[in-house]
Image (tube, rainbow, N blue to C red; front, side):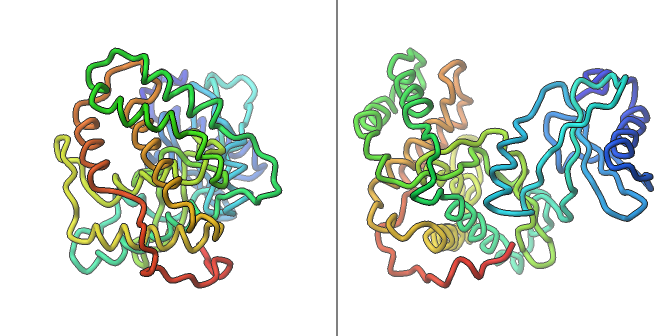
Length: 329
């Protein structure tokens, strides 16, 4: 994002503005500040260190964020989810400014885990992401609005009417999902991060411990399983529209499902067909979105491979279920 988009002239002005915002909001002197691309997308992002040595992320944006989405995730998962707070600095030219706690670590994407000895770190993070998805299920007695009628069904209906050529081969599957969509109501609702990826996952490079999940902007109460399709992107690479598994992809998948089933309500172990339906719908929606623009050709190729390769495990005998309450992040 160019600095002029947020009403400033240069990088120096960005740093100065971020310092002023942190000082104004925290009522504390700033020790240092530097720009950072790691914990902020679609913004000019600055990490500010205060005199007290506490660190914060300041985002300068042209659009608002849904603070309540991150707050909902924070209420469930705790401090691994930083909650942005809007700061209105008098006479600031920046349209929208936010501040949130800084999470120490590296994005999973940038972690220096290329050598074979780090394969276990990737597997460990995949398991922790599965745990997070499982822990985000709403209690049975918690009245939360489902997105089945307001989000999922309208999307599937749009795909039926869409004359985009690339969706043609997938219309029978989409139609079948629409016919069966009522089955999703058997599943518990889950606060669903719709875009978990290696860029918004913060890890400790030394231990492989998951430190944070960022960017809850696209989050909804959806049937459990919709975002399990994310394991496709995490466990394999998109090579020009073909999924290329890693040597340890199988271990990542197994760890992911182990973590999810360990922490999710036990009743889902008898709802595997419904979970697969949710996963298929998630894959379709993740490719064709709002049925407005043709998807990238590589995404269509990946969808074909993913549908043929990735599924909810039907034999759960390999899973181990220690208490989820003992897990720490």
